[in-house]
Image (tube, rainbow, N blue to C red):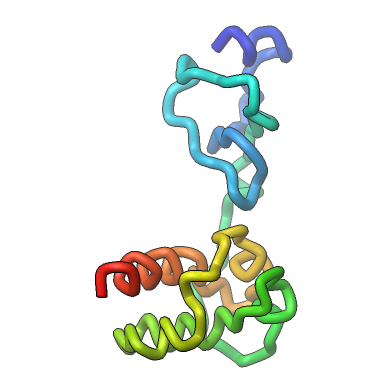
Length: 127
């Protein structure tokens, strides 16, 4: 809370507070949480900035694959995860996902790709 006060206070429209960047940052539930030297930023996001549209069907536009810095195909990983195809996930290198969130922010269908890929990675590691 000291940092927030020093920076001018928490904006009135702050709906979410994030430590780090908007894509890979971690939510902060308590302003008195510890901040360490390596913390790159504390972001106050408005409701509008955190709003996502209603999830629609994948239109196979390929934006998520184009945005992936690891060269993965998030649309395919999503389909395999929904089908529970652990072997297919491993074959398509789900464990190489660095969870940057680029696919999530590029998807015009608002598919929660990152959440599904994170879950798929946990399942792939167990088997």
